[in-house]
Image 1 (cartoon, protein in one colour):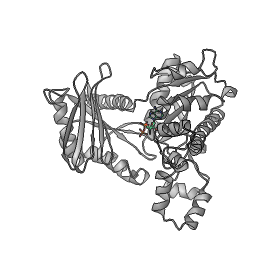
Image 2: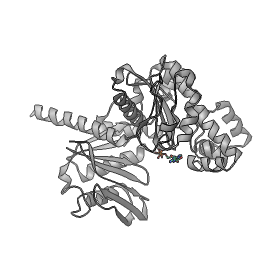
Image 3: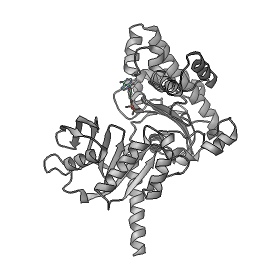
Image 4: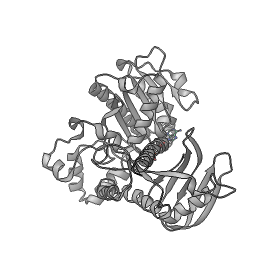
Length: 407
Ligand code: ADP
């Protein structure tokens, strides 16, 4: 069974083709600068050389046609014909309150994805463009939507409601939805495997630290709280996003600076976080370099970043009544020994015995706590595409089965 996984953004598409027999990646690539005359397709079939093409690619259907052409190219490709693709899985950022699991894409599902445009204005519209493109090119192939929000649908009301007039929840569905669900699901499932214990018995705190960053409390395999909220701006300090902020301070600044909604939005999402505090960059690598060179604002930004992570780990241990494991993943979580060390060093009170040597070694997936540590700490590279491929295979197999039964 071959599953094609798509992650469609407004001007880029990332893709992977999986052979699900052994969960191997047959090919992967991305199209960037969609909408321009100089769009770039970078493709690599496993075991072959990378292919780069520059072309005028004006929209998503044209981009996906190009990808399918290179996938089936006798020299550079991975398959002989698109007929080998059993199903297509799409990353969809927001399913609002409608989906607690991945679903077969139907007209009704597409309508709901559209209704959720307001909740993920940067992501859901291009996600739907990708779905429509596949529908027009491969009309017979089942498509599955895998929602970033679905994993968090298990949060209880005390975690997902905001303490504002309840009517606003009823009227506009203002509540915590959470994001990065697919990543939190993958790394916590993997942590349980590494611990050789059923995920149902474990309390795990998952730290997804990329450009966007969130922490999730996962109890018995289910998300019970997460730091991102109604939008991905809440919670941790991020590359360019503020994370938690007193809404009163925002109102004060808006009034003092006569900021409109758009400007305030840009301030919170693009000019805050690491870049806002340091004035240098939203990239943790540059913050660490400047900090080493003695830049105090880089040091302040770094300290704030790790402090908030520590604070949430403590909060989620309390929320779950304990913690068995902490997992670090995504760009910063996987690649910054300094962030991991600063977060864990003072968490001995929670039962974390940190291992400096293991933290610094070059293994990608590793345990970084000592054998005697009560709480185990892991670095696990995230693999959202694999979760999407697995879910897509499962849903597609169910559909094929029920079609067979109906015949
Ligand atoms: P996204 O949220 O866009 O998927 P990633 O998970 O790829 O982002 O994370 C990208 C971020 O990871 C970069 O902006 C950078 O801050 C950080 N990063 C990558 N490599 C390193 C490193 N070696 N040390 C510290 N931070 C790193």
